[in-house]
Length: 257
Ligand code: AMP
Image 1 (cartoon, protein in one colour):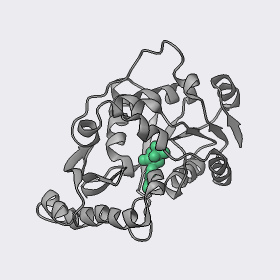
Image 2 (cartoon, helix red, strand yellow):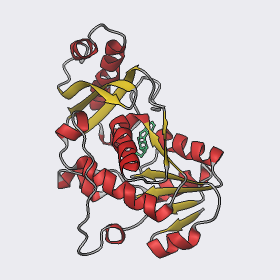
Image 3 (cartoon, rainbow, N blue to C red):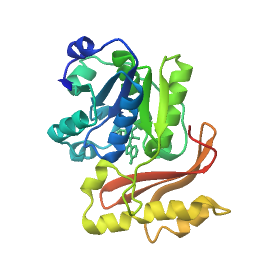
């Protein structure tokens, strides 16, 4: 596996053939690795980007607290069969006088509670799509609304990439894997379990939002909402546990294919 840190190095590392891109912010877990393995299974060249994208964070302390372990990430990516790990600096991605943004219309869920978040996500993903020119890019259902935003962007702006979505990988007790889980204390992690349990309780209920809210076990959610992403209806929720913000969702109807 080649580790490249600059755009010129990345360009030199790209090869002909079917190229897959897995955009990430690092601190790899099985969720990330499942995307890398899926890319490995269907592409001739697998590129993973590792970039903690400052423009998608609201509060600066959230960005600073975000877990980072690039050495471990490089080892895990290499073991998953990744060909190129692109780990640029913020200066590479946002040089001086950067001033162009992709603003995809979106409402509800993360769009309403994290203003500017999807602008940062869409902008960095379009840059990555232009730099890597992947045939297919792999994303997790864990961030289902992000998938909806990116599908809309590639359709509206005619970006020639397939957006593939893979199921949320969970710990044995149901908690969705997230880089942010590393920030939870043992007690907070136990509290966090109310999130997937509430979504499970809501999934088949006549009123999913009400049933999920009732099962939150004292957890104070930022939102519990039904959200349409493509043909699928998702029950989605966000909650802060201590100073860590977690999100999760389940499909209530349709398929997020
Ligand atoms: P992140 O590093 O958190 O930006 O995530 C990078 C990619 O991994 C995104 O497409 C996420 O949706 C995906 N991802 C994160 N957590 C999981 C998970 N538990 N299961 C599947 N995919 C995930």
